[in-house]
Structures are given as structure tokens and as C-alpha cells.
Amino acid sequence: MLAAFPDVARYYPSTSEAWEWQLDGHCRGVDSEVFFHPDGERGRARIERAHLAKRICHSCPVLDRCREYALAVGEPFGVWGGMTEEERRTFLENSRTSRSRTEYRTPHSGYRTSWGRVPLA
Image (cartoon, rainbow, N blue to C red; front, side, top):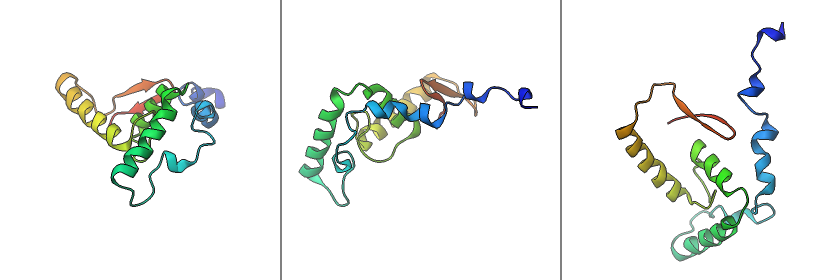
């Protein structure tokens, strides 16, 4: 009976495969407050913290994968792939504006990433 179902593993990687890239991140073992601002952090302190996080990301072997993930899922918090939440939001808004002028999308269209199919927002 199971043979009647398609091989879903082909389309959706297992959880461990989908997240395995994080094991190689330079952020592992670093205090999460470097990448995620504490409540109420503003101004120079926030800029300096984000700059420190970006310096860690700069030489990370999974920088592209991390950024790809954060952009694909719309990660709302923290520095991911060397981008702050504001930078990701701006990038996605600019991408949507540009894409809406040049592409036609069906309601169920999406794009593929190295870790699976992601629906477009």
C-alpha cells in the first residue's frame, strides 16, 4: 500500500537534513544576544551589536544558506545571513516590487531553494 504514495522525501527533506547546515555556522556557541536584540535596545548600542553579528557572519561557511533560509521564511527577528531584520524586510519589499513588474505568478507558484520548495508571499 505504501508504494502507491510518491517518495515525499524527494520533495521535503527530513528535519535533520533541512537544518544540518546550522551545525557549521560560526554563530554556534556565541551568545544569542549578539544576533537578537534585547527588548528596548535602540540607537548606537543596536547598531554596534548588529555590526558585531555581521562580522561573525562575514566569514561563515553557511552565510548564503542562512540568508537564503531567512529570506525564504520571512524570519522576523535577528541577524541571519549577515542581514538585520530591517535589511531583510527592505530587500524582500524591493524584490516583490521588482518581481511584480516583471513576472507573472500563479496563486500556487513558488521557487526552489537548495533545501526545498518555498511558496512566494
